[in-house]
Length: 120
Image (cartoon, rainbow, N blue to C red; front, side, top):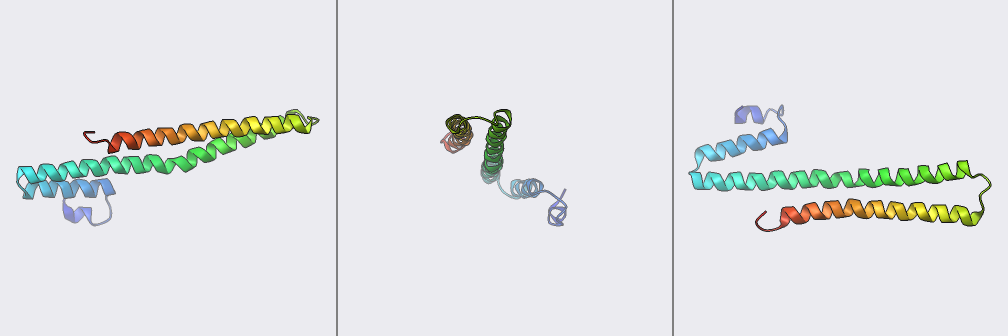
């Protein structure tokens, strides 16, 4: 692969970045090339983090759907349930949803903290 191929649009963003890093390494002294490669590695890590974070919305939506399905299942299985029992079930599912969202957020926060910690 060369830079001309990279800018045809047939390559993924990662392949374009690989080409740029190879160019930098070939043209610069080893010290400067190493710095460019280091920067590229950081970009890859941040891109991975971004992709990881963009899944948050999907994971939260999935947890929400699970809660809704459980509430609907309760209503179906207990058509004559008292309002208090239904309210308790809804509160239970809302609490489980909140716990699921907190777990999702903790996972993403821990990942970012690890990536952004000096010396990582």
